[in-house]
Image (tube, rainbow, N blue to C red; front, top):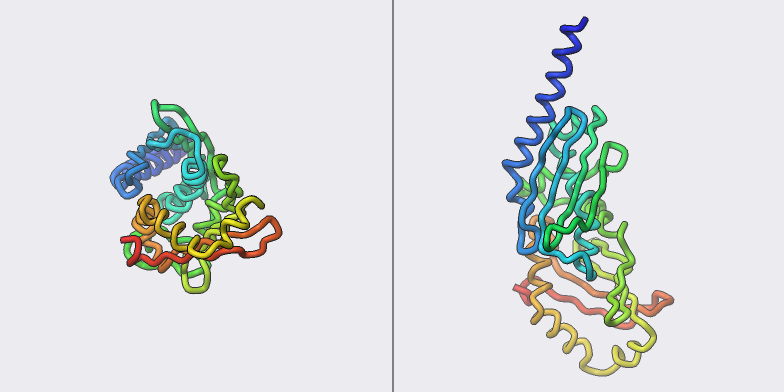
Length: 240
């Protein structure tokens, strides 16, 4: 009996280490101009520690939105791998720490089989398959969990990020009452669109979501009642 238990523990340890090795081999896939690197380590068969080093400072809308969604996105990517799903099924816990500038911990979250979405196959997406609309919205739900997020400089809130039937990425933004008159002025749409394109952030969004088959990006600006005041659509051709 003791021998069988030892073999079982060794097998679980080997499976955990197999996942860690696989994660670290493919860790470059997550890197971009803000996410510098990620690494997995393990100290026991039932626990994996994942660190993500970023250039975020832990404040601002983009930082809050991306870092808040990372654990869920990592969880879905883990589940897409056979060995990762086996670890989830076995009850292994994945401790995700996101570090910002100066190695400051800006997010610390544990994920397990109870918290991961079941319907997105990141492995097939990485192989070139585009997610369908339901899968895309499941991915975006990782971001929606952290909404609304407010830009303190303007009072504008991002209240939802969804994919419509044509797989356009739709941001719904609630603006304060003081913005209503400005949005109604002729030419405001072009000025706002030009400013977005010049900032480079739209190009970054298209680049980071290229594997998801996003067609266009839409911004719906609403008042507090949900009434749409302005709609701005940016195509990939315009941004790139």
